[in-house]
Length: 136
Image (tube, rainbow, N blue to C red; front, side, top):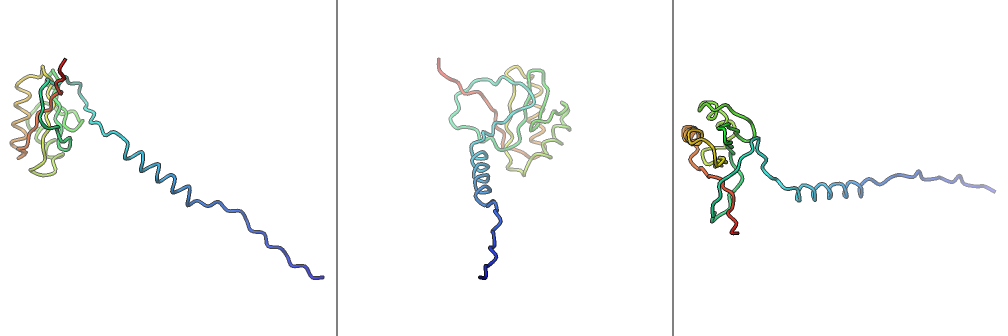
């Protein structure tokens, strides 16, 4: 009697379903992550009654109560030239909005420096961020 040699298949791990699950998990995490804008300075915004919510895309200038500047999270010295340099580095063109987060106790001089620097760089779309007033 002649016996054939049995061929045994080696076990293999199918990675395709595991990769699918990992990609779906990654997509879920990306879509559900909140993209909150964290600033480098602690500011207390004044209250207002906004009609339209602010589009958070643009260059963010934060001025705290002591007059310290941060442009897109990076601390900047208070000179107008350094603010202009930072605005040029972070702006995506002349239509880029500048969102100004100024503390309610921020010096008027600091706000004027930020506005003048944005004007000199050619950024004319300026938005003042405020805290939404909630009726008590």
